[in-house]
Length: 307
Image 1 (tube, rainbow, N blue to C red):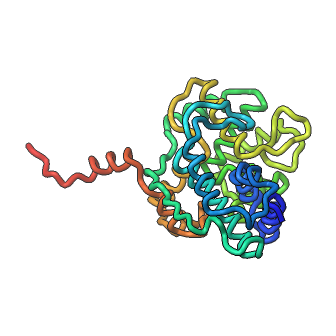
Image 2 (image 1 turned 120 degrees about the vertical axis):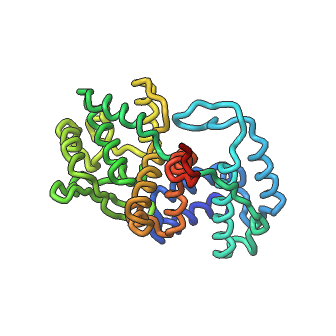
Image 3 (image 1 turned 90 degrees about the vertical axis):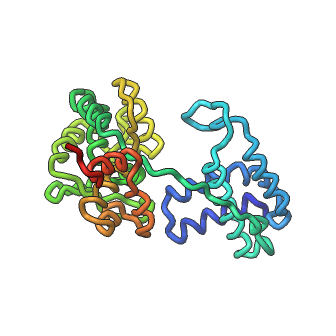
C-alpha cells in the first residue's frame, strides 16, 4: 500500500471515529505536501532520515502561502508553530500506519518536537470592536446585516469560527436565545446569545438568502455555507473598509469571552461556556494579557499613599 492509499485510509478512520470535518480538513492540509512527496512510495520504505530531511526542508522554506487559495504568497519562512503543527499531523498519520501494520514501526517515532511556548493569548480591542459594531449597524446592505449579527454572536457566545459557520438556521430558538451547531470541533451543541442580539439576528434573517445555515454567503442565491477562513477574511476586510485599527478576529473574541467568564463566573463555568474538554485549555484562554496585568497592578498596589 502506497502513502496516498494509506493516507486515504487514515482519513476514512478519522471520519469513522467521529472526528469533526474541521479536524479532517486540518489533516488534509497539514499532510498534503508530505503525502504528495511520497505518494507512490510504500509507507514502509520511508525512513527516519526521510523524516529528518522533510523537517529540515520545512525550516528552510523561504516563503509562505505559495499555494494558498486566498492569501498572496509572501517572503519569509514558516513559523515554529506552523512547522510544529505540520510535523505533529504527519507523525500522527505515520503512527496510524504503524498501528495498522502498513509499516513495522513509524519512521517518525524518533521525533521529539518541542512546542514553542506561546505568549499570553490576546483578547480583542474593545474600542475597535465598538467602532466596528457601530459601522456595521449603520449599514443597510445585506452584507452589513450579516456581519453585524456575526459579530454580536461571537461576542455573546465565545464560539469558535467553525461552530458559528455550522449553526443550523432551523434550530434558532428565539425564546431561549440559542442556536444549534452541527459537527463542531468537540461535537454538536448549543450556542447561547443575549436577548439584545436577537433583533440583530432577525434583521439579518429578514434579508438573508434561503439556506440551511444561519450564516451564509450574501453573494450567492443558493445560500452557500461560509467557512472559518471566510469569517477571518470578513473581519480583515471590514477593518480595512472602515479604517479600524486594533485586534479584531474570531479568536480574539473567544479569548475576551473566556477572560470575562473566568473573572466573573469562575473557571468551571468558563469551561462550559467555551466547550473545552480539558479545563487546562480554559486556564490558558483565561490567562490575563499584559495590559490587564498593568491595570490590575495599578488598581491593587500595596504602596502606601503619601500626603
